[in-house]
Image 1 (cartoon, rainbow, N blue to C red):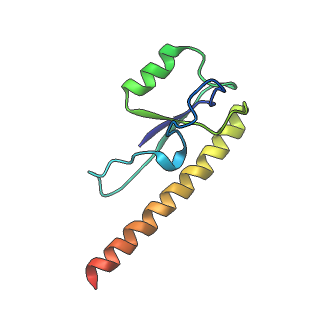
Image 2 (image 1 turned 90 degrees about the vertical axis):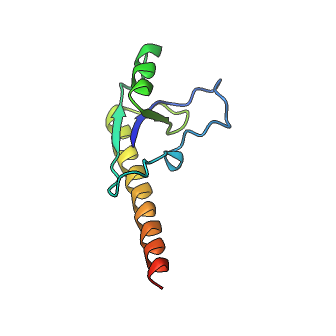
Image 3 (image 1 turned 45 degrees about the horizontal axis):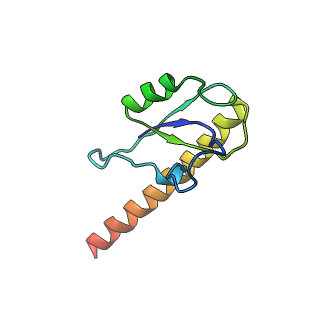
Length: 101
């Protein structure tokens, strides 16, 4: 999965699926991986930057409305990505165990 971080603006729709837990991982590969893109503090400035990322298969996620420094955003995203990957691995193991029963 390809993911880029961008702060949620207060004018954006709250119903948007833009949290890390909503990232769609490809199901065609036996091994899942994640590529994270983090922009400058305050998010990606130009709409063309966001469009380019989306054209290359990146999904937008947000860490909320607060503006984070890039180094803090990286650590936060890595933590969330690790959590999501662990959940996926546990779910896969449960499915495999059910098939073997």
